[in-house]
Length: 467
Image (cartoon, rainbow, N blue to C red; front, top):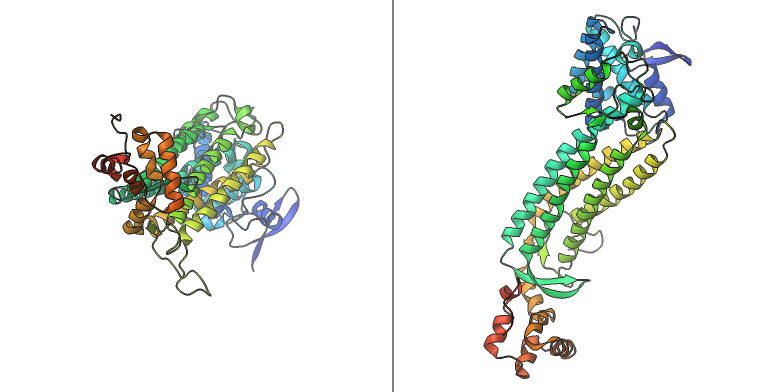
C-alpha cells in the first residue's frame, strides 16, 4: 500500500496515500478499536461536523482572520461532504479518548485535504492550508464537537419522528378497522370489563403520539450551543465578534434555530440536554416495548392462548416444531427497547462523570444517543410495515371470550349491588354457568332489562343512573 508521511506532536507516521484523512486520524484508528462503528455510520454527525466547520470558516473570513481563498475552499469542501461526498473517510471509532478530539481532527483533516485539492495542491501539503490553523481556526474540540453533536441529534431525530408518525397512523387505521369488534378488557391478566379491539389500538396510537411533543421539547434544549467558547468557554483564540457570526451562520446552514448558550463555560461542561433527550428516547422505548408485549399476548396461541388477533406470519418459527410461527417482529422491537433503556443508563453515568470544565466521556454519550435514535427509527418502520399493517382480528375468538367472561358482572353492580354481583361471579366461576343464566335463575332482574344491561355496546361507555 502506498503511503505518505505526515508529522505531528509525536513525530512522523505513514498514512495511506489515497486517504483524505491525515495523521491524527490514523493515530486514532490505531488507538481506538472499540465498537467497530465509525463516524460515517451516522451521516447526521458527518453533516453536522462539516456544517460547523463551514460556519466557522465563513465567520473567520468575515472578520479577516482567514484569507478568502482558504475560507472559500473550506466552505466548498464542506458543502461537498454535506451532500454525501467522502463520508467513507470519517473512519474514527465513535467511542474514543480525548473528549472527541479524534472526531474533530478527522473532520479537520478530510476537509483540509479536499480543500487543498480545490486549490490545486496534493493531500498532506498543509503548508498551503492546514487542518488546525485554517479548518479549526477560532475553534476547539470542546466547542466544535458538542455543537455538531447537538445538530446531529436533531438531524437524526427527523426520520425518527417521521417513522413514529407513520406507525401511529397505521395504529389509528387499525383502530377504525377494529372499531366494531367487542372483546374483554383485562387488568393484571384477569378479565375486567368489555371494550372494543379498536379502542385497544386507538390507545396504542395515543400512547405513542404523546412523545412526539416531548421529542420537540428536548430538541429545543439542543439548540443552545457553545460554539465560540473554544477550550473551556472563555473564548480564547477566537476573535471578537466570531461567536455571534459563527452561530448565526450555522443557523442559516443547518436550518435549525441554534443560538449561543447564555453561559459558554457552563455549556461546555453540562450534559443535561443530552440526558434529557436520552430520557425521552427511553420513555418512548418503554411504551413501544409495552405495546409489543400486548401484541404478543393478544396473538398468543394460536389454539391455546388469547388468540384475539393474528400477526402476519414472517418466517417459520422453529427448526423442530412444524407449523410454528413466532411473533418475531414484536420480539425484535422488544429487544430494541431493552437496548435503548440500557443506553440511557450509559448516558446517565457518562454525564455524571464530567470533571471541572469538561466532560471527557461525551463520545460515549454521542454513540449511545445516535445509536438509540437509529435503532428506534428502524424498529418503528419494521413494526409498522411488517406487523401492524398486516394484523387481522379473530372476531370469533373475541366473541367467545366475551360470552364466557365473568367480568361482565361488573355492569350489574349498579342494579343488583356489589354483594349480589360478587356472589354471582363466584357461582359462575365454580359452576361454569354464565352470569346471565344465574341472574335469571335467581330472578334478580327481568330478562329484557338484563339483556339491555349486558349488551356489549352498552358496557363500552358510561350509562344513565340505575332506576
